[in-house]
Image (cartoon, rainbow, N blue to C red; front, side, top):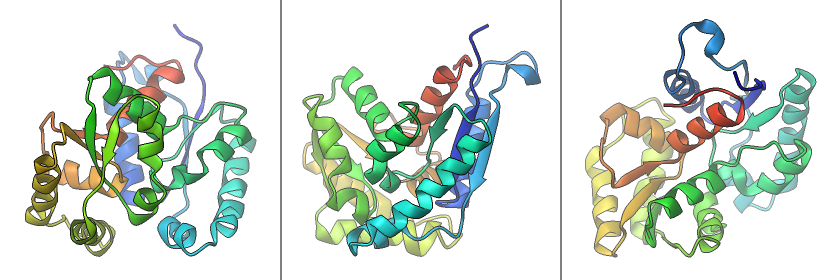
Length: 234
């Protein structure tokens, strides 16, 4: 058996996405008994400041102070690796990786590598304003020769509405609104769309989109967590 490592999950952004992440890891692990599953410590910090709001308003340092303290708590609990089921939070990816001595499982980088393996060259991104305006996926994709395509202003408002007005409010999400944005990105020549917000992963789970056209970043990082922590992934 591979050497097992304890995974720390800094979640609560939002809680439903964190629950789904744990479920994906559990269901995605090949097991014959309980002991084949990963050892996982989950810190669901639901009251953490909104990532998009703080980053866009120039208060990133305040947000980082909270995140840094949370990561130190997980390290103190013996976590060897860290994963964060929040795409926008990866604005601080380099800081997380430094704090974890190179053991941060980066959802953006893992997704970019996955997209590259599928030989896509033009990929749509559905995400929060914080992720979009900082071109978090575009920078990662560029290293693989992939172009990130974002929704236009009107469609981005629809994406934000799905995330904040619907999913974060406990609703299922407006599928017609989602499909309008997806069609626009497809019409721009996108070969696939990355669901680059974990609330959109929840949306995907609610509707079971079940299409190769959609790449759920939460699926990608869940598999990476299993493999890096010594489990066997399906």
